[in-house]
Image 1: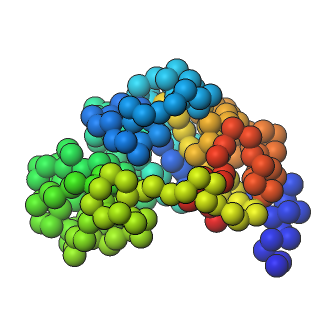
Image 2 (image 1 turned 45 degrees about the vertical axis):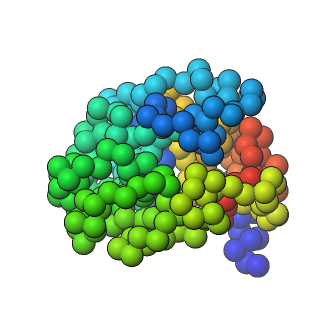
Length: 256
């Protein structure tokens, strides 16, 4: 009760450490039916129009500039190297890993698993700050995952039973690409606090709260504007009432 009151009295301000999502690519080698970005069954929408206008890759130098800021590094709890595509298709992926390792910032990678060869996993196992590789596709039977499971943390979103990987319970239909199917407007919570602890960098350098496409800042802006600017504070206030614009709060499973 006290916690809820503090959020409401914050006026959208936060000093909490952040989880930074980094969309390093919008390109994918697959077109899975369940994917909201690359499925062949996507219906025209404002979101789809926005996505198609995004650059294919995030400029590494732009990301490097924000990580070099001391105040940003102190505020970042974890960086998620992900994308609205497959991160391993970004030729600079290892540069991102090396930069985060240099500044001792914990990070994770989300991938469909197609490019996880023994050589690549051997190299990734050298990064002490790599906390997890999340395998998100349904047909990953990669023998190298078992070889390196004691050196790299893997989370299992495949819908299959893989004894050496922690399974994330989001797979009602095991082993099929329908594993993440959920009923429309399934989320019935009345308040979301995710934007108080999560922001995402898109490939064009824009900053959005959580996973919305409501731009609140740019990677070139001051950290104050990025993390506590007028737009993101309003977004947080609206999210507390589940009324954030340009978002799909009722169909989001990442709420807090």
